[in-house]
Image (tube, rainbow, N blue to C red; front, side, top):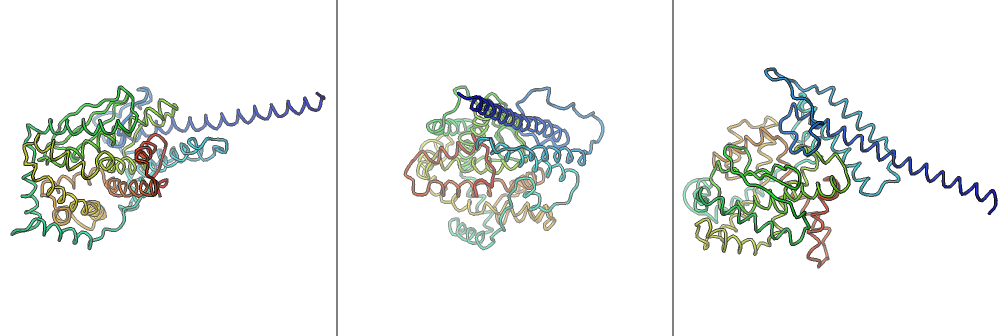
Length: 438
């Protein structure tokens, strides 16, 4: 070997070492931004109690609580400056040597910081229309409400439930036949979630120690909520403040549990936090672009767990008898549910008009009674939800459409029965944003 050859090899080796060090430095820079993002999110949570939906990281990362007994305005300018600084640092990272999933991580972190900045600005008093708010925080905008489609669905419901008086009153009377007696709710719900869990675990590998607890509450603005506690455990709260109908438990079980929010959080913790050590996943903000996929995927989950025929059979043969309701009504009630789902966009439109000042509270309640066929009590509760969570309502309908369309495109022409399940698991085990599904 000549001297020149040796020197050349040494130079190549030095270059490789340098490139490797540079790559590690870029990864370390992302890690620093990730930790700073978590700390920023926790600080936002001091001023916005709903912002941090779950936190499973080191207790020492939490900021000191604000002093009690005084009003605390959010320091919006300072927090926005921190978000901008982190964005600049993140966007300076050279990702050319990163794996695809690492590039996804950077893109995910960037979107999370942009969203957090939007939420800070909103809390700080920046004027935003409903659509501007949803774009800034969730990176989606709900399509315009199609009143003709709503009217067509109402006409079909009017034919399904004939009689005298307003359609909303007839629908409410119809629904009363399907109300679960309070002393049977727990049996029906736990049976539904056990079946959803059994079906989901046949397709998605979950840690052996994943688990959940169920708790019943009243006077919340939502129907059910998953509070993720970490270590593969969730607390699922079910609101029984209003009558629960027999078609609700299965939807709640799949949405909050399997393959919905519980499974989402378990996969994130297992694959991204524990598997890769990506600390940004210590925190789950409620208000972020990922919420679109979380809610959309949770809504889509029941279509994976049960075909339409399987859902009818399980409800009729298992849940209806447990609820003490005549199983002969199940098929007709399913047709009613199909028509009601055509009205889902009406709720989002109601909150959009309310927050934009185009309708007051009474007009919004009347809209919900007219186009969502809600009782006054349910309309009031939904309005409370909109006042508390604002443009978050877009995540349900927009998210479901995005996830369903994505699944249909990806599985077109495939006869693989497991493909949809793998795609759903991938949505959570790999960082995704709504734009990735377009």
